Image 1: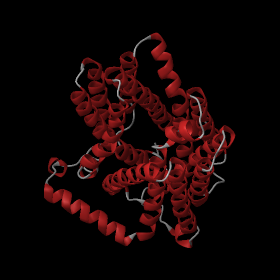
Image 2: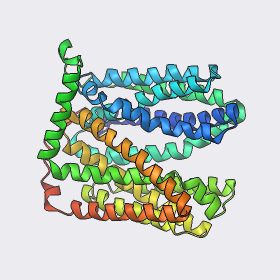
Image 3: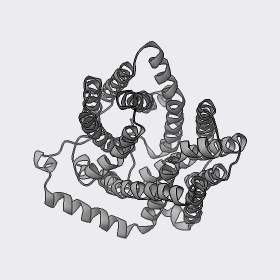
Image 4: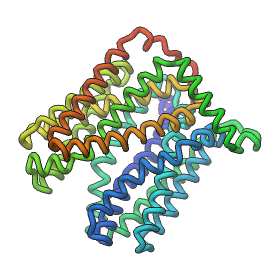
Length: 411
């Protein structure tokens, strides 16, 4: 029993760091929106903040995977956490919208690098037999951030200003970096020349990812189909506020409660997933979870009352807890850890492009047809793609995917 508890020492420490950073991210998002709106009184200026993230990913993912796979992941994670904290602290001192956009762009670039870096580190740290349980717990932590983050931001607004809330986010990132400092160093030291990047090196890395994709078409088909689910979710979510207020005619307080319903859905789903992690197969989590998400979106799209849209929000977030945990486990077990950074970054570039395109198309459809028509159309496209994904997870090839590539640590 003692050995079992000790084996979860570092995973629990890592989950604490992830949770702290996640709550801080929500505080940062809300506080930055409020600060920008107070400065400009322009919804357009606020919406510009949401375009920065995919644009930063486009600029970063071209080369970041090559850097991630050649650097010490623990040190890189600490650097990215503390760099973001330092820049975030500077935000309230500037009144120029252009300067704030530039700083947010740099922060977003660091965040787009942090995600694949942390995925590689987690894969090395967590043994195969613990990954599904760890990812279920991570989903639970993320859902807790979804609920606690906005609440914490509101509490900070009551006792201070949006700037004070932004400082709290910087503090959370400092704590996250300190937690990473306590984690084991899992990377073997490499020669200095291996850490140097060039255009030729990046080009060769792209070719290596394409070769891997051709040799593992089934794995990458699952990857792309699930990524497309998240693309469509982001595109439909861009119309969420307009749909809730203009189509269902919800008040601001009712919309706030609707978000709480979604938070409760993902929280309950994560708890159930954590309790039954060993009994639920990875293909069931990905396939059935993804279809459940799309059906939840379709229910929400066809809603005409608070009750039905609430049921849609709850069901899609409930299913998302299963789908995301299953996909993370599949990704960790299927992509070679020594090229995971490059695969995640290059395909993340494709995902960012699709997010921009599909968000634009959904916005145009809402303008030309109707908001509800655009949401229904997007939900039907999502449902079709997730049905294909579900059928792919039923193939015998899913069970033949080798798990010996990424054995992880025994830490």
